[in-house]
Length: 97
Image (cartoon, rainbow, N blue to C red; front, side):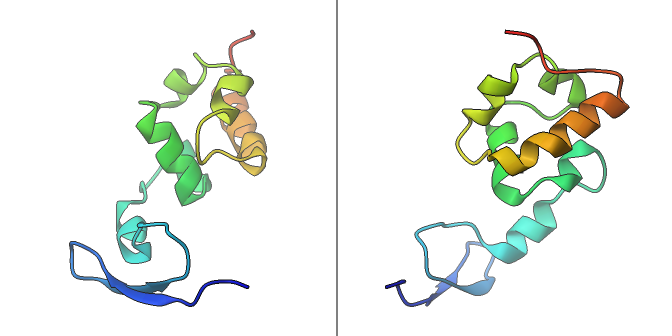
């Protein structure tokens, strides 16, 4: 049985309901979304996974293998086609193992 949603308030004062332990405020997530670039196509968890790993440019992404990227917490297999397309559009690819 899923847990009940609880009202939460983020440090910026936004109020939102969540049923999981995830502390991310949906409003803050929208405000922090990048305005342009390959990261705009990714979900919040996938984007945060890359940012936490210090990957913010397509060139930095190309220095990693697919396996390394998929091992990041928050990165799921659904993001891989988006990352492949972004790399291809820049004339790049993931590093070979």
